[in-house]
Image (tube, rainbow, N blue to C red; front, top):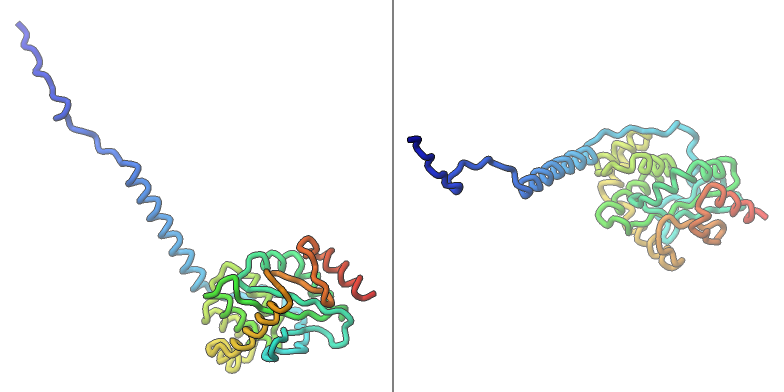
Length: 235
């Protein structure tokens, strides 16, 4: 007679180890966190490389420091002025620079317009003031346009204090005065007055553009729209 098999208790069977969904989620989160840390390290520690072609720098007509007035560049006597309210941490300002910056530079360089920068500080309260102050320090040394262009050219960079100082060196800004201006937040008070002037003018966002005191609508913030507004202002 054959022996019957002893019944197997299913509760005592060895179980295969499975990775539960909770473990998968944790692994994914750890990988994402590691990637985020790596990106942030790069943003804060990557080297500074100047991308500009080394073209002519427009003359700074009105430098930083005059209460309630922006930094004006170009050729004195131009019949048209463009007021540009910007924030160096504003992604829309980056897009505007990419699309319309070259057209505005041409208008400045051929003497058609002057350009007045109004650096604001509300997009990123932790970083916008630092970048705006560094821009002002560079503008005081005659490097308004090239410094602003480079801040946008590498928009993903954190632009730490060290990186801002290195950018000045790359652009051949006077190291001593510029570095002191960056480290000492020399233009903090002036920037506050610029912000107050923008509020008085009812500027509510960046970028905002005026051509001879006439604010352009959002759909006109293009090379064609700006050129048309300038031609109209010339009369």
